[in-house]
Image 1 (tube, rainbow, N blue to C red):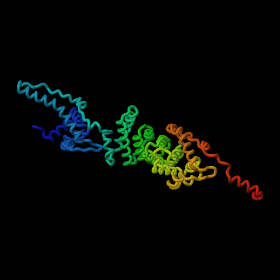
Image 2 (image 1 turned 90 degrees about the vertical axis):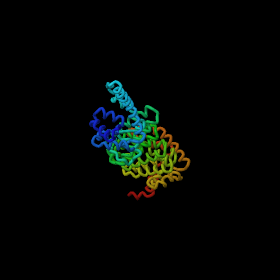
Image 3 (image 1 turned 30 degrees about the horizontal axis):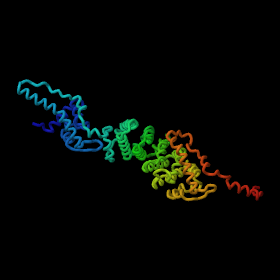
Image 4 (image 1 turned 180 degrees about the vertical axis):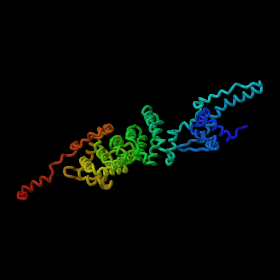
Length: 426
């Protein structure tokens, strides 16, 4: 005769003894840790344990699918097989000899080692939250105070694995962890305000990992974490030095657009970032993008680069000096174009014009492009270790391309006027 399910569930609760008994630990291992609370509460509410077992559900807090339940039942049946065999032999022994059989020897202490739940084991679990399910349920409420601390530790462990082993699993895990962080800070923007300086430094440094997929996920987190506090911390630590090489490399349009959007957001929030971009030689990269001379510089990427040039030129502290640096590479005729519509600036790069000694034509455009590419080949490797003390690009080198300016014409004209009208000064 079978036990009534409610009576069995109630007994499970009574034997679980507030999660401290051997029975609780054995059941916890057999049923997966998700049953911890339902087991302890089942002495008073046995129906909840039955309902939990009978229903299927998958979300960031519960992963109880038909496959997982089937594997749990199989594991219980495997364990029960030996016990049922002992029971059968014990009854037979009593009937035949009238003597009690020796006690059942079930090794309940090591049941956790024997219980296998392969489907459940494939889930990425951090702080009792299922990470892949967070990615699939982006609007599911998550408590960041419980989720993020263990997540950061897990992220560092997985990145270390990624550096040691060349296999796709660690990359998949790192990407999922990062995507879940982006989801949390998108839903709860205040969370990013509390990011410590070290946390931001670690995220930015991950842009150096040799994985486009991970770099793209890092960009998602950084873009979602946009706020004044993060911008200030990023500026203080000169963290854009990790993002700029990605822009110069141009691996994917998504990465390039992500970096350009991030830089524009930082520029609008923090003036020091404008100078950092120039000191790193980032303005060389922006010029080459606008001229379509960097891989994956699509129309949309060019537009974002032109917007960033406009944002830098518009800065109240470093805007004018930025315009001068750009004009030093191009021609002074570009200056009014920097703050115009992006389409006009991009088009002007392709238009011939003359400005004093500088003739912006096809030949000179090719010379400028060749020179900037050569400069970047030596500058880009230095970017991640830049200490912020000196500019990586020497603007005086442009005189290797352009002629040096002659004496200002205004002074000559003033001298001529003075010679012709000596009484004017008196």
